[in-house]
Length: 425
Image 1 (cartoon, rainbow, N blue to C red):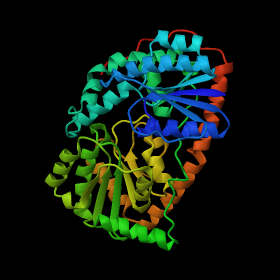
Image 2: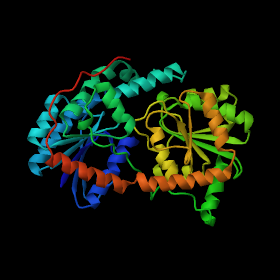
Image 3: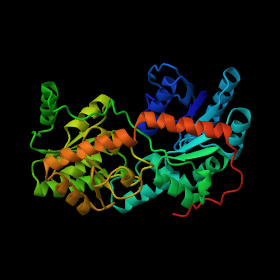
């Protein structure tokens, strides 16, 4: 089978979508399928992958509008590819590609049936930003991309509507995303494939080998870099420094944690334009000597950080799925996250804890409860690792999507109409 994957993100441009498409394409190629990825030309060196061809196309560097320009160039490249090497199925990764009804129809008639993966929705992103603003996150509207989402999400939602209406199969990445599609678009359930959660690399993200002298030496070395000992409470947050990720709320909660557990340390790993504002906020809260910001790390470095942490805190206001909790769980580290959206589909009391969305007191109380017992943390970490191996593996993703591809190729195309998108705030 020749599978064409259209994704606006692909290494060296990572992010959740880029990571999932990278691993899926590799897994499909390892099973003997031909894979072509059509992505944005963003410079940098793309990793060489056996059996995977990567085509890079132009795009307009304009917030939101890039999804349209990339979509047009991607469709042209796809048609040329199909002429030279026939494609069996096209896997489109939404919402970062915006095709109209006519473009989906053109792809289906001239190339191959379309499977659309929904990694969340623009309207959901907008709601997350509005909630972040309500909760006092710093500089919510200081990012041009976020401003574009605020005012243009309703307009671009119509392209998600097209994906739902014109794809052979639609695949939401969580039950929360499926509910989002059903409620915002009144999408008939029978048009939506079973949810396929994305998995993560369980060979890269592995628990700390506590019986290894070298591993434990590295454990002490890394924790010492941030002023922490083996007995300290070491918290880690990973994610882009953007308003909807909730780092401002995390800092407010962490100040409450330090007041009761002074030997606590927080490292926030992520790129973004909020670093200075968050650093000033930490200073204003009196915890700047306990908070460190790392601007970016490669996967191996992040994997090490997961392994040395006692608890991962993930306070995001909106996610389509969210891979960071799974990476942490695969690393044998418990997760404290919000009781909202897709996060409870992965995290519960057996592998971590949930706190109330947008409530710093609830977050602080949850963190303090979790770090009160190192033994309980180790037990939850082991359970989390097993959960990821059982339910969120890359191999499972490849098998699930191959089944979906067969369904798209052999099954009848959905017919009918869809109700108008609900674009009210």
